[in-house]
Image (cartoon, rainbow, N blue to C red; front, top):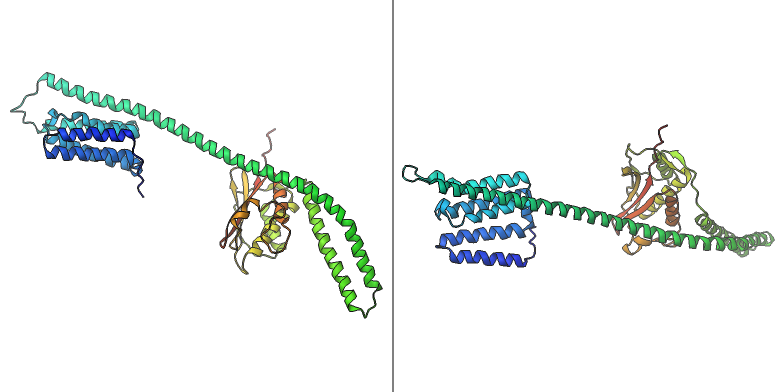
Amino acid sequence: MIQVQKLRIQDGILALLFGALIWLAHDLQEQVIIAILAALLLADRKTEALSTLQGRIAITSLQLVALFCLFWITDGVNTLYYLLLLVPIVSAATYLGVIGTVVSSVLAIGTYLCYLLFIDWNQWFIETEQMHVLAVRGILLAVAAVLVNYLGEAIRLESARHKAAAEQLADANRHLRDAEAAVRRSERLAALGQLSAGLAHELRNPLGSIRGSAELLTRATAKDNEVARELAQIISEEVDRTNSLVTRFLDFARPLEPRRETTDITRAIDRAAKHARLEIIRNFSPEVPALEIDPALMEQVLLNLLSNAQQASADGAPITVSTRLVGDQAEIAIVDHGCGIPADKLDSIFNPFVTTKQTGVGLGLAIVAKIVDGHGGKIAVESEVGKGSTFRVLLPLPVPAALP
């Protein structure tokens, strides 16, 4: 799709000047050609599709053809319009490099002087002063082209610097937002961890008393009192379930200190898939080296992510695990084609107590994020409802040993 830039006041002035030239032209042919040249000039400056090399060559060629026709009907080298040769010269010199400037200048000067080839030298004679004037005109056109190229190159270099600075600033802003999000999440995790640890310890004692009382009740109840025995069994089961939840709270609150070992990440992925009883599509890059990670903790991360992918997918739906190098990090991507995650929960999915499941307390992904952060890595998610999710775990590569 062709995009047209907004008109500026200079474009209006340029249109008025060409309108004056059209009004001063001697006949209709001159007026039409000048109008075509003006249209080509405005199109060159306002249409982004012509900013490519092919576009520049095409517009410059059309401008030279229009000038050739104009000179043909206005006395050749004696034309009043020879300064219009600056149109293709300036156009090419502004946007093209030195070679493009030289070629366009030669073609423009050749377009002007080629009419000398049509003169019958047996009937006409050009005086030395006239040849001098033609030579000066050609050289001045070339000088204008070089000067405009200087200016165009300076503008292009400045534009490139501004573009590079803008990209660096955007990248820095993105990293800053990620860092701020990570700090906020860490602060929330720390506060919730302390609260969870205190609450879990306070719950452990009464849970133990309740379970002990349920066991005593079971023993003291007559065998024929099935209702009482069933209620005691329910109490014991619910205590166990609550105790399991308390254990997860403590795991979440406990300070994380990975015991790093040189580990082949593909083996950790295979072990996690085996424990999840899940067949996965493996897309492992041989470029990923062994990583310095805690095998047990990283297996817990992978098991949790694979289990979530399995629960979100239909039976038999493919789940892909891929590895690759991304800069100085190793990426592990787990891709499913399940129900996806609502957009309003994507930013908070790694926070504690945030879940998309009907059951669960939302600690699984929070613990995953904590483990990944403890390894100096990052975790991110891309998801679309109804199409699936992709969880990406980025882990730092091992630092090469220093040479002795």
